[in-house]
Length: 205
Picture: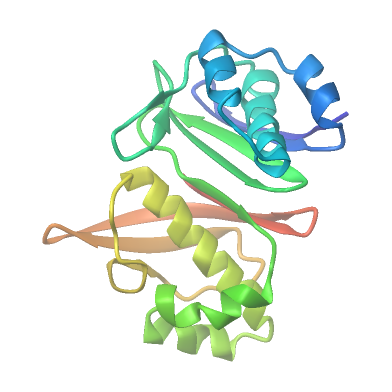
């Protein structure tokens, strides 16, 4: 069954992951969309984007059994009528998270490109920690996903290297600690991290 995993922290804090195996046509017939979904989907032109979009909606509509309309803030951040929401995909995996007050999740597979752009998102101390790891690319991938997840919570511009800092961790560690420096304040966050079908999944608790 394409629903790969369903995590339930509480009734209003849940995450579902969809393993995309269907064709575009099969997924369209499987996933019931809202009228707003239909209007959004029809605007998509590229096959890959349609598959990503539908897989994420399948995680939301089927995995989490949500029929609420998806709304968008001016920044483009999506939310539901009664809760915050985060969507992510790195095919063939797509995920949806709902939380009553904040939502941020990212799915990423280790890719050498992440290593090449490390100076753009990692503080020098974080890069040093990655170099000390015996799984440097995995470390950098988790670091990137953690910052992406936090960026989605705030829904507006944050400098990844300077304003989002992730405490040193070990690859395979299930819990991460982060600090967001914003508007003169330092805000701490806890994140969860695990691997699913070769992908790293990081979400804000």
